[in-house]
Image: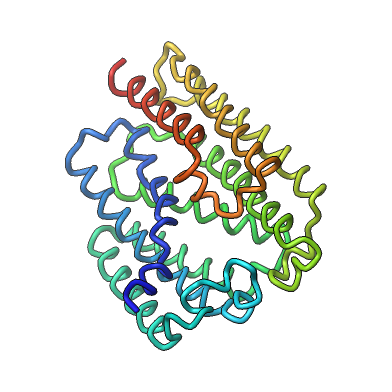
Length: 289
């Protein structure tokens, strides 16, 4: 049962919470011990609250998951994790996270509460509304970035990163919907109601728009943000971002992946290499130049 609970908490999804470190890295405070420890604590708490969201989401979707070709194997849907146990675990995680978040920072606590409430509304109502469902998913990533801002004394964090994160998360969200629609084909609406509001050509148009604007927005950030080096060396990181976006497009269009973006991050070697090189370049430019 413990293994089933941990699986329901979806630790692989915790990779999304690395965006909490954006403020720490891009405000050049990565080497500050206090800021680093506070951000690490915030990361851990966001992992707990996001796990509670996944538990409640699986509880709400249990009947639909049992009809899904892949989600039927989830612990709650398959019966490996009793619903009563899942409810207790979800409530306990919320209480613990709210309490510790307040001790860490009232501002961080507010972000955690807003994130939780938005996701509860998403699980109950908003996930059934086309376009708005993906916007809600995108808001979760932006809130993660802002959570990192509340944990440290930010000096020159650029709002451009909020723009880039919004566009990037929309790109991932529409890519996820496309992968789901392609997998479930004509029976998509019976598994996820919102998919009745999408078509593959429509999602391809959305993806084309947000992928292009993501590249443009990131490019603008690299030479116009107030905290980047004046020699415009951050522009050297643009090719890595372009390749990562193109690689993701290749995976969802050709390999029919993308239903779980975190799986691509954890399993696709070319994508991983691009991200590692991008991260190394950012650290070198910000901390060694």
